[in-house]
Length: 366
Image 1 (tube, rainbow, N blue to C red):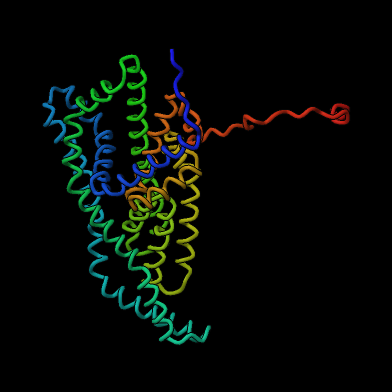
Image 2: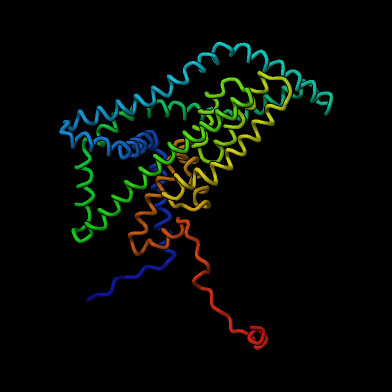
């Protein structure tokens, strides 16, 4: 039997590198298609138990999927309805808030002039330069908003199709691999489903708990639109790392515009820092992190890479995507080291470490 040809490491690594570059390029070009499809796949997996329950009650397949979609839509609509009162109040008082913000800005300009001797014209010029340099960021934000709108319209269609053709898609995965690997394929699909479901459910539980804590703290501090800001802060908190900063900035800005002095703003910062500590050390590890099992270093890197690839949507999708990769890596012998690298199980010593021989003095001390 002829021995398989071994290629040098530099050649194999070059091929792998070009393959990754090509894959990332394709994902970037097809982002408008891949992003809503990825969100739809996650939500379809989340709704799948409800669809299966309706099918067990002899409900026709198409009708079961439609009922599940309507229940999900009802949940989102109910959330917006509960916030509608505060949204209406915010809209009505927006002109007053705008006028107060302008007066605060003028006072800040005068303070900077008196403190640092920087004229108002130079301050305006500096702000204009900053705005000009942020045009690319503004364009990216507008693109993200438009992409989000496209996701909203495409999601129900994609979810319906994925749930309706679920059996066809699963059979494809079984048929694409050899029959002796069917057990491993079934295990990977099962663990992938459980990981995504637990991750999304964990995020929803975290969002409800953080929204409750945020709203309670803002109500105690007497901040206007406390419930609206608390819920927005919880939603932004789902955006890894930068979301928490924006969540603090919004109520601080509202308190600055609607209240005199700075004691409320200080109270908001302290309250939100305490809530962030509770979330990071109690809520998130208990309901989200343990079920995904991705270490913090990899989480930060993939969130930044997801942002570079697909913007805000990529930041949301990056963690569950890598969790799925880890499940696959852990099932393939050649890829198990990569699975360990992604996981949060830190070894006590590295494999190349050897115990040095003890000196006579060390033996005597022992």
